[in-house]
Image 1: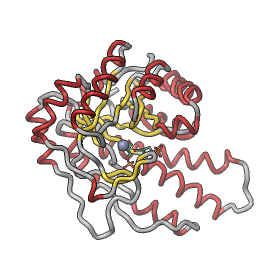
Image 2: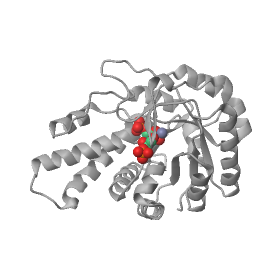
Image 3: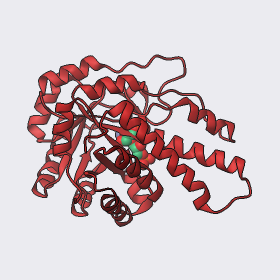
Image 4: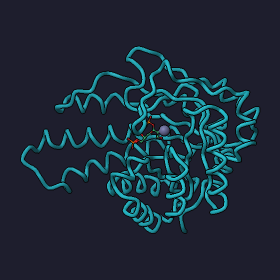
Length: 311
Ligand code: G3H
Ligand code: 13P
Ligand code: ZN
């Protein structure tokens, strides 16, 4: 099976009350860890590449790694540009074989966001590619952009219908309290997703797939493992998984997770070097790191997304 778009995946996810995991990829071990987990659980999958990942690993290398995963697993996999910030970047990924792109113009005015999103949608649809757009602003760090909690803003449900109608986008990322990165909330806070906003959006856009960014849960055992093995991460907590599960049962069809995989990989490598200070063969420390990513993705598929067995 070739790479697929998210169209059919999202229809099934919406009607089935589950969500598809969108995991960020940067190298071979990350692609393998994620796709082996999905294959063992027969789960549909979105692999996403940020602007930074593409600059780090090169478009062709990432493309070929993902194509290898499609051959090895036989799964429906969509290859998605995460946080595209210009028409040119989206066009380059569409021309280069991606099946889905995000144009993130959420920091622009409503009218500018519509105009840029519409431009990307026209080009993407002409090439059989689907488009995710964003309305509302998440807090946290993504690529070079750092948005403080004060500058973040929830999506206004009264805007979504006009935005979707005028842009023709295929899915919409909304801000309901999730946040990018590993430092989302201070320990002791009680993060609450605004599921009421999600429900209001769903009422106004029945059947339309909604996306959640910034959905890592920052598992404390990995932060602890990093700090016990020479790291120095400040305390922080993430999005409670049971709230993501509720969102997945509603209109949320795509849930983005990157930081939790970074934590699992880094914790594993730090532990490995602490236990084997004399080792220097990358295969020795990257094998358990790949296994740690695989275990994390399996947990997300079964306990958060609910998409196991849905490929
Ligand atoms: O939301 C952003 C993703 O976590 C990608 O991060 O731009 O550091 O690759 P990155
Ligand atoms: P996290 O930083 O919470 O993993 O979010 C990732 C993301 O939204 C990628 O677009
Ligand atoms: Zn994001």
